[in-house]
Image (cartoon, rainbow, N blue to C red; front, top):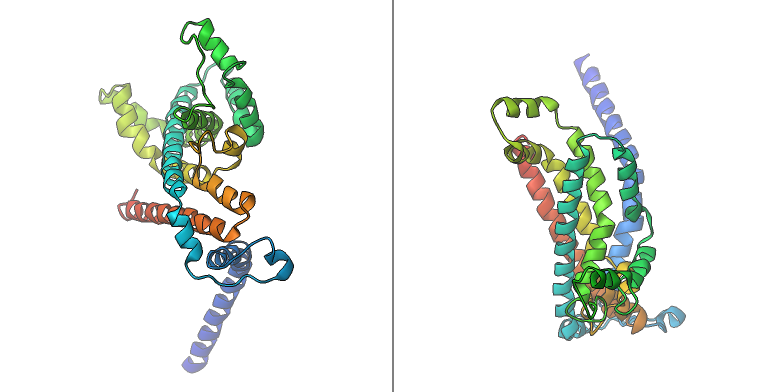
Length: 307
């Protein structure tokens, strides 16, 4: 009798495992089709001579490390890499700082706070290309509203070459991207602030903690999981930005706003060398993968400490 019971238990366990895999199977197929295949195809393409004629002949002979050698010998790669880092870090710092400040500000309810928050969401709702075109007009050196305002208040007399100077263009792109990303940071952080128990603030007040000490000792620690999510999503969306820079500066002037994303576009669709474009795309994937691994490691350590 015990043997029969044991066999039934094993069959039941095997059936449960089968059902579990059947539930997971659609997600696995989706990942393989829309993430796995393009990733493998991009890696293979970086070792092939892939040109427009390939689409007609179907021939893309392997050329070893020729594409990789050509890309890493290109001095523009180093400039694009560091400009990508500056653009990403500058955007994340600006978006997060202002977004957190606005989230804390709106956490104290007042009249018309909902209306103002809705208005602040508009930059996030407008397509990025449209935002870039509008800001290109605003930052025009000769006829832009921004320079007219600076001249009106006496901060500039000749006008700032926001998009035409190699030393200022990258900063201008960062400022525009900060403006676009503030609403996302504000909304997510505001939602996190609403989940912090009010009792913690009352206890901190009874202990004599001031506003800054309460923010540092209560708000930030409780908000840490949300902050991690915001920074990770912000990094993933910022490091690969293409449309904003193309519409705003086109990667110029003098390649001063060229990033890894725009370099991939330039090699693939301007120079029509898809193999070299795939190499830069793989570099972007590698950077994102390293960041994701660091995030998972930090998140695992936090879970181990019970946070």
